[in-house]
Length: 582
Image (cartoon, rainbow, N blue to C red; front, side, top):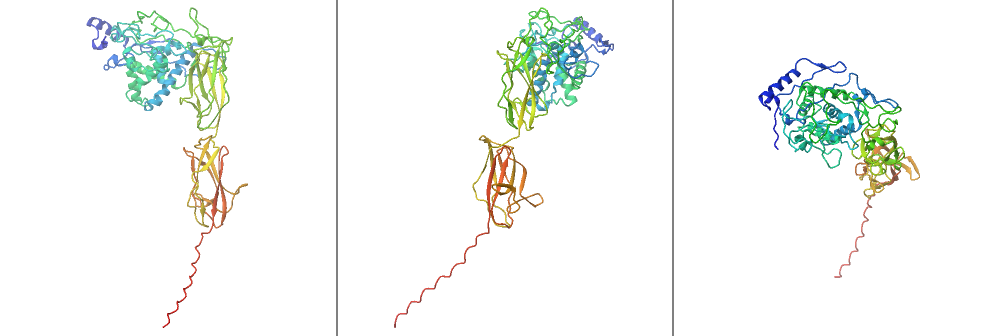
């Protein structure tokens, strides 16, 4: 069925209804304001731009939550032993939801680097659109435990957008509704949808899919979101309202100052909506019963978070809070049953700089009795002063446990920084203690050096060698690139001390030097030494090249006077033949 696009200000409904609704909107947009529970002033009406049809926005200009950021600046993650209070839930972001935002940012950074999409913008929009997926009520795959649906876009208080998906996404075959944690309308999701969690599906109810789709949507016109003008245009394209723009920017600024991760399902639920003055409370889809995930109307009070047990902590802080409390009448998710993590046989983690760790970290999620827990999202996070990453190019990875309860991290890739770093393993959305793995990066090394030619290296006293020494470094048969090396003109094969006579290199000032440091092989494992010169001493000399890892090569150099050709010996004159007798 074709969509019927329209807005109240463009006469999308009949004159009588339009007059009533416009009057209501005018009242809600009057200079008067309301106050929230903290006494802050809140503008309840929307101020949409007169252009751009609602169907051209991500949400169809659907209602959104108008709760303002907390008055206090964000605090760091609560330490072990603290309780997750409602205030902490309001300021924090549920673990799986936060993971989805950061993963989307990383993906856009690779595919559209010029967009400069910050994950904090996705968090701000997610907060305003759905209260961070209704406080992080998602399963281990990132799918909301029940659908989050906006009201019917039937032209009564909202835009008039007839059904475009036969109810496939929103369960409504008459009108479209905004769907999921990022509140996409079906007609927009049809082209904007993405698969953010790699399960082969594009589901607007999945926070990984929805966050990635929102990122691509905000970057679709080549906007640079580091520019204020482009940032505003992108936000308005999501929901065409000046009030929406200002609210999203306030949350964006708040999250940029710092936030913390909280367990899934413990975020506070928003209470104030932009359509409260109009009185258009959400109506469940004909096929979707009313559920806690449906947007709340003005009479729905904010729900307090569930306090953690004494001794509990935020994920990743190492505390242990015991099994997560399950509200009465609900079935615990696999994540709720996790009591602890166990190492699943990870061996020593060592790799050379620039290489890939052959061993992969694996951990197992278990119940208190030691039973494996499948379908739990486990996060691996690289910490410490290191440039190491996972093979994905990121510092973190989230992996679902398999049927044996085991999650295997992507391969670790060493950077150029040597030394130790830590990989912390935690359960996303749980307060159980994490596991720490120590990984070591050693300097690049070679085990073999060889000359690239077998040309003789000779020179006359006071001259220069025509051939330059070039060597190739390998390690276990593979090219050894960027390996540190030294070159020294030594006294003898069994005496590596620097020689004080014979061949030499020249420094930047043209002075003789017989030891070169700070050398490195190139990306093909090759190292070409500077030109060699000879003093007046003749004889056979040795040049030794050594690399990190113990590879050495000794090259023979000869300095000898030029051979002179012998003077030709005068040949004897032939005897005069006797003259014939007369």
